[in-house]
Image (cartoon, rainbow, N blue to C red; front, side):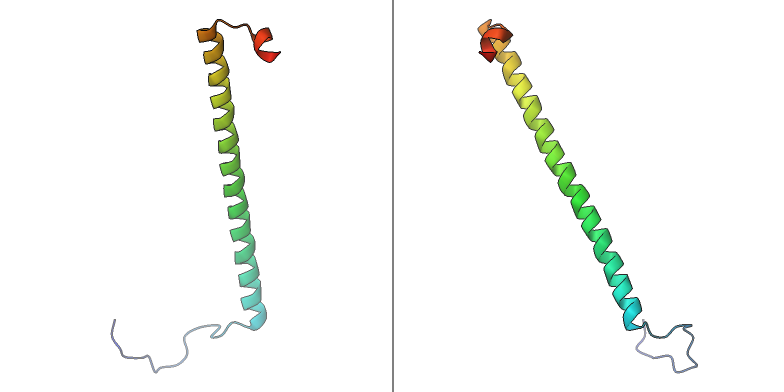
Length: 76
């Protein structure tokens, strides 16, 4: 891109954003960012809970199979 600047008539329809427009855009962007972060946190927590549940189910199943223990004995 050259270093030459356009010196003709203004071609933009709205050359400057007002402070209100800038504030509205910033607020909307912040809302979207918070929504995305919240979704990612909930997904991460859900994934962690599911992994721990599967680990617990696997451990209980292994104890039942290897130890030849009944579920009633295990829950006492």
